Structures are given as structure tokens and as C-alpha cells.
Length: 350
Image 1: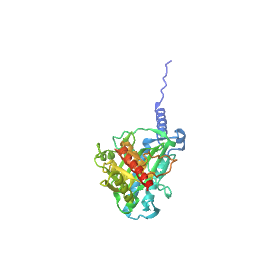
Image 2: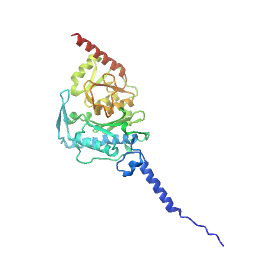
Image 3: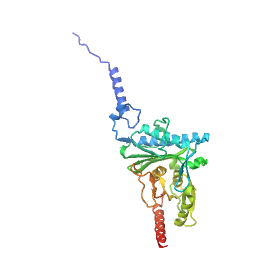
Image 4: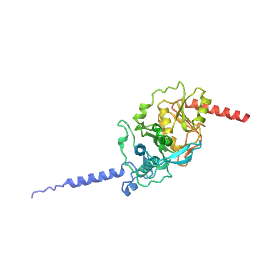
């Protein structure tokens, strides 16, 4: 009697195994994409967010918002209205570009990261239609080494400024206009994105991890600090110019500019040694710049020399002014505090 061997056809079994592995990889790869099937949220740890993907999303959001601004600028149909007056008495305008940028930036990030807390300057505005985008890792430069770091969602706060320097946008002073996204962990800014729509340049940084090639290019290895150049807001330059001259001397170099994002980039590029702001300012205006300065070894504090908390439970307003520098922060803040103390004493003696 001859034995007969039984041959098993491994083809279907191998194909089935590959399909199962692909499905598991698809379900377990990091991220927060809402397009995944409902069971995806059950298979993943729902209290975590992938910081690499959040960085990619932040860069894309800033750039997508910039495209909306460019579209409105082309038509010149701004649909401008006023939100009222600032504390300094200046007009606080709102345009269609603010709203369109806000909608694509916030809705786009919210779809991908639905459980992350996101604040935008234009949160009061409603978005009639869905504005979304998919994550595109190519926004990172080829040499960037970005880890897949997971953090607790409850520790994450995102701040969006869909159009910084709206007044200047209405005046066609486009060099000052930026879109900004910031990611804070437990109140500390760790990712900052400042996008300049009209130049097409994007400066971004993740503290202790990586930064954009553009940011590396504009930041000198050895900043020149021989003579201080203080950049201040053009919307209320008078008061802060007086403060600058009182603290740093009558011959101080003062650079008036608009937009908190633009002024931080002037400090980064060593076109200014410090950015000084003496009145209230919103946190979506400064969070991204704060993160970028930290990534470069710089510092942003209130005029009381305190770090700014960007946590979700804090006020969106920083009411104590700010000083932003790459170097000599302690020296500059000491001069400011000495002047304030002496000014208080002289006022009491009158």
C-alpha cells in the first residue's frame, strides 16, 4: 500500500494573514483621525495624542489658513467690520479673511484631533461649511527627525490665531500678516508655528526636538547684542516708546512693527534684540512665538518676569505685558523692574 501525502494550499491562508496584519496596523497606527471606523477609538488609548501628528497638523493648519487669507486679498472683498476698540483706543477690525482662516484652521484640526482642547481668536464666529484637510507628512523637511511621542490629551491645549495683524491686512501692509498655531503641554508652549502667507515662509519649532529649515536659516549663530534694538507695536507705539527710552536710554533704537508673530521673528532673525509690550495681549497672539523662542534658547515672560501659562483653565488674556528675547533677558528685565520700582517710589513722593 503506497502512502499518499496531503498538500496544503498555503495561498489563501497567507493572504488572509496579510489582510489581518494590514487591518491591525491600520487600526493601531498612531493618530486621532476621525475618519477611522468607530471601533478604532475602542482599540486605541483614547486619552493619548501623537505629538508628531499634532505638529504636522499645526503646520498644515497655519498654511491652509494662509491660503484663505491670500484668496480674500486677491478679491479685496474684505467684508470688513469692527469688533470695537482695543484698550489703547485703536480699531479692532474683523474681515472675511479672519473668518475663513479660522474655519479651516480650527475645523481642520478638530476633525483630526476631536478630543484636544482648541482655542481660536475667532471662536465666536460660526463656520457654515466644513473646512477640513488630511495630514500630510511632507510639510516636514526631509532631514527632520520627529519622534512619535504620545502625551495625555487632557494635558494638551492648542491656541490658534487665524490672522495676526488684521489692521495691517486691511491697509495692505502684508509683511506683518501671519497665521499662528501653538501647542502647550500642561500650560507650557512646546510647539509653535508662525506662517507668513504673503512670503510663503513657515517658521516652526518643537522644543527639544526639531525646527524648520527656514527658522534655522534666519537665526544667526551669534546674535549681535552690542546695542539694544527694541521692537514695539505700531498700534500704541507712543507709550511703549516712552517706556523704552526711560529704561534703555534716550538714544535707544526702536523698531515699530505690527503683529506679535512678526515681531518675534524679528527677534529670532536678530533684527531686534527684544520685543517689548506694555499692555494686555491675548495668548493666541504670543503662544507660538513663546514656543519658538524657547526652542532657540530664548525667553518670553511678563514684565513681572513670570512665565506665561497657556493651560485651558487660565484666562486667554495676559494682562501684565511681556518681554521676549533670545539673549540678555535677565539683564533687560532687571532694568525694566528697576525702572518700575523707582517710578513707583517717585510717584508716591509727589
